[in-house]
Image (cartoon, each protein chain N blue to C red):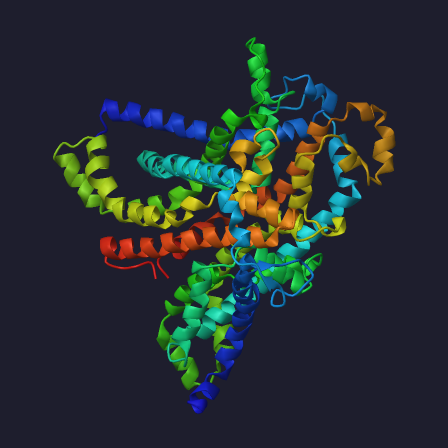
Length: 298
Length: 297
């Protein structure tokens, strides 16, 4: 059956609307990229919309030459790698252990876990506990409190329960213990699920600024996002230029007066956002799967 | 019994880290709620602190607290009214696209903002809206208008929060609806076409009823979050100029508790909001049991 003319027009209108939506998502990134690659004082005059008008890499040289920023990047990468690997391991182990329906006390343990989703002590008692454990102002405050994600565990549990029991049973008959079953049967079969959960955990770590802003006061422990958060309300360039040991770039920029807070800010944002933009296209197939599994009642 | 537990020793060993972590980071803080009724100073033991009765709840008589509650409800209800229908609408639009490549492209692009932090969103807002040289003010200037101090105004704060929330999460929230749409039997559409039903009639009589269960689940799940406004989103946008409309429960707790050291009072506020959300979750579950025949857990 052929589409009527009215339907054709409707589809064109929809395509235009959706294209506008795509532009609204992508344009801010292009704009920030253009500003970050443009001479600061020149950009401040206005009129830079899509392409840099007076191209320069000086903003990036200054940002990447900044010791604080480089160090915060290291912290972010470190917490993302350790937090994701550790988080996946703990979540997988707990989910696998709980997937044995015959486990004595199983329902009690499940209730113990579920209760934490319904009620929490709130921010202040949580902070007091972090303080009592001596985690405040340490790197581990980024890792330990979030190591076990109840939500991810339930998603994983549901996935493991969907694996045919016959596979596990036949391995048990062959004398395989639970540890071997986990590594040789469950893990290979749950790779897509682990990838999806790992992606969400990693993005969560990459984007978290809260812990760095309120659980840490040492400047050498803050992650990139917390640095961005501090810079957001900065009034002058001292936050970035202060601890800069990229003297060469600074010296060369006798145009130092041409550097504006806005252009520096945009380069820092781009530096923090680029890794996500780069891996994004490759990870899509995983996250849609992840959301769908996670949304189904656990 | 002991034999059985021994038989499952490996499983218990695997579960143990999770149990310990929850004990440390969820259950001990729950016990720490007693700070709400105590005269606690950081550095001392919670258990040794003296009881303070209801002293810490004096914030209830504070007019500022009333404003904070109003701000929280105002923003969360506004976000809900705009944020709930938006993904349904977008999913319906995307579903009408017949070109697969374009469809995939739109979906990928619309999910993208979900993967950036609210801090990055705040920077985007700043680059567009700032007073000196923000893109929007550049245009206003060219059109001969007076620049608007969007980020430091009480009128613009709520629209900015709602709009940036839509920008960031609408695409992501369509995933569930699009998945639900794919489960609808294509034959229904075929027979509707034979009957002469137009696109709009098909959407009204087939697509919408087809995704109704998903809509109701999402609706139910979003009820408990009605009293919490994402602090992640608000905090970066907050400044002294828009403080009077931007201050919500979470920022109030943060400021009084972690920044100013009124631990007892901030815990009391947190307790109150935890209790309300618990009530909302439990009654939501009852509601879901009645409507869908099964609860959320």
